Every structure is written in C-alpha cells, then in structure tokens.
Length: 119
Image 1 (cartoon, rainbow, N blue to C red):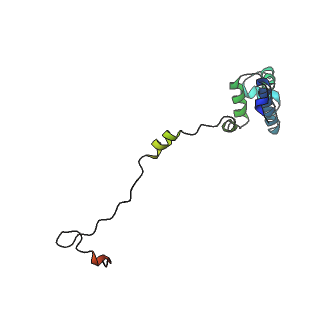
Image 2: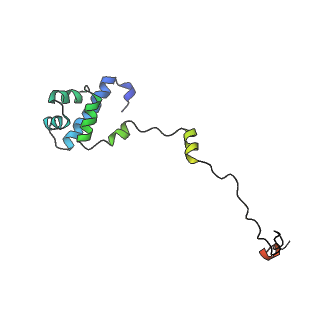
Image 3: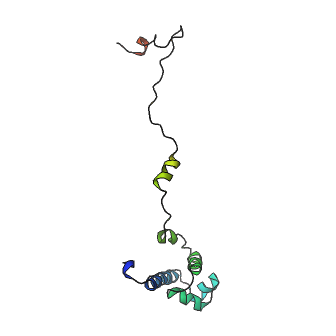
C-alpha cells in the first residue's frame, strides 16, 4: 500500500479498518470494546472511521492485546554511529606479546632456547 499517495484522512481510515478487523478477530462487539477502553460507542465508531484520539487507539490496542503492533507502526530508532561507538567502549587495537619467562638469574631472554626457538 502506497501511503504517500493517500490523504491523511485516508491513512487514518485505513488504520481504523485494521483496528476493526482486529476487533472482529477477537470476537468483540463495538459496544464491548468501547466499554472496555472507557469511551462511548460513538467515539469508537469515530476512531474506526479515522477520527478520534491517538490515546483511544492505544487503549483499543491494549484491550486487544496488540500493543506490540506499535513497534511496527513506529519502530524505535537505531542509535547513531557515535552512540554505537560509545556503547562499545574501548576496544583493543593491538595484540599484546607475552613476555619471555625470566631466567633464574632474573634476566629475561636467557631461556629463549628452552622455548623452542632455534635461531
């Protein structure tokens, strides 16, 4: 569906139609759903027609156990690249070499041959 070719009223009416289909899937009457969300049946019909308040739409989705639909409707924005870098924290940039074990006399490097180095 191309929402850009539709008017704002047409998009709102489409959302109302989808709410109505969801209500029917849950086998609720308009009167029962309106009573559950605390609005009049007339206000519910306005909501389905594309009018009404966003709060009433959210209340209807809550009553129909469909609040997760809001993530599809308006997903949470991803963090910016700078925020992603801050979340990663400091990352290693270089590998660290293991120091040679110290010889009995305390000098590192005297046991090189013992580590399998033949040069």
